[in-house]
Image 1: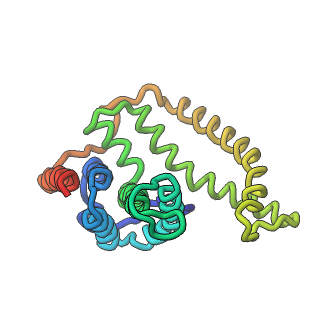
Image 2 (image 1 turned 135 degrees about the vertical axis):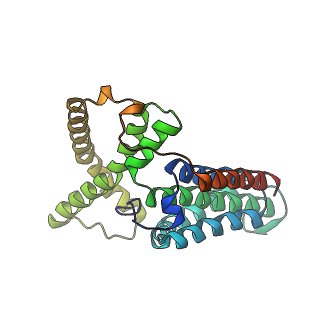
Length: 248
């Protein structure tokens, strides 16, 4: 996930929307996914996300994320079939109720993650934090903390890759297919990654404080983020999407 959440420039309508409106789109899809109870609605919401990603030109990144989410969704299905034992037997320990519950949980897992990545790939993090402060009146320190945490995700991924390459040069083999063995090899890497992350966090906090972080207010931003007519129309569509998710 080194480049999954990186901003992808574009001129589509989705790129030109207010960052708060993009956040509302992701929120509406997520809420509708949790409220939906039928397979048709769950697949429709997933298809909507993929269509928006294709329109914005970021479907490749969504596909990369799907490669990670599909195994997790399958694990979720297996766990649900192990704990939900109602209904008629189907295969081994699996029952009809367990398969239905598990498959819907797996679809919800995929349907919740993709809209967030879609929103991040079409929105600059600076615009997202500033728009949340201006439009939603969120305190700047909270918006800054959220966007900074997102910025550190690819940084920590690169740090982990660098540590793994250094260990590979010393003869450690990380390409094993045994998941337990791979986990045993990965756990010792958490210590140097933690030390590196603490150092980067401390340096970032010091730099922000020296630049007057605590003096930042809602009026400090030089760029404004007004809600236009298209933003209002999209927000109305988001409300309708949530209602549809609750009813279907």
